[in-house]
Image (cartoon, rainbow, N blue to C red; front, top):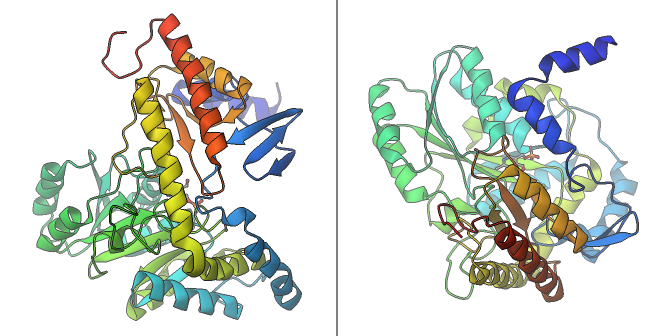
Length: 422
Ligand SMILES: Cc1ncc(COP(=O)(O)O)c(C=O)c1O
């Protein structure tokens, strides 16, 4: 047995062993994509419709964005290798100014990923004696960031999603600590539901806490002034603007690797906080920067968003509604109260999940699997994501494939909804 085998086997215990087993159980893990045409992808000789992409606005395929990248590469080279502490190509300054204006904050700071922002900023704010209140449904990367801060001596308290009583109790207990951070998602990555910004922000204000909102999914899709024509709201300027709030006690993190099809993320801040983060967050000092193509993609993405973004968001809403209504009519259950384009269809059992994934794959559909232990036992889901580059025809193929999933589950006498006996 090699030293590598020994270290791997020593770690393959409990939940990790299960994850490894599940990873080998489906064609929908680690699939090798050979070619794409729109949202159709070729794996081997098999073309499947992509319902696992988070390129919600279809910017990955947008001709104007694609055409803008080469001139930027000619000007700046493929990669500015300075860490941001040393120097940044002016593309950064332009993007930071424009994102600040779009979301309505004094300033923003860009780093390559949401994860780097979280693991940089959260420990920098908490130091050795802060208190973090982490929503149990918030993204795992925030938990990793919180654990780093906890290693330095800060306290980590988690609360069930939307359990504001427990949160308030904790805030009360730590009323005198000036360093309190409440950590939540904007649009939740498994349901597409939004954090209720007014409730969490008012509670935070009552106890002088800051709210850290990871809106990796919401930014670009969710925005201001929602109405019946576009319940997501307009401009895609994020969940804070959706609820018509400002950034008094909010640190808002927008992800650009989903709706903006890039490798970048930003955090809202005022000038003083920006200087502080620059001095205290290690990824700013020590990590590599975003590649030129990513920076130019977001700049052109901002232009495209201004010209056509609401048209894309209306199409996205329309396609997502068609899919959700169709799946609900068939009897499937999904916890989605926003028609946001994340649709986690409840299956509730890992073996059924693997079998239904096979049915989808054989019927030309790619989705993201969420098996136990990646989610709680009994909450296993087939997670569909929809983008403005999907077509109505692909939604029809999706619904037809789910008809077959339904037949299979009924044959197996498996419930289509939690707690329902077939
Ligand atoms: C809510 C949320 N936060 C953070 C991340 C990680 O984002 P990034 O790839 O920019 O680090 C994801 C990615 O899926 C996410 O869904």
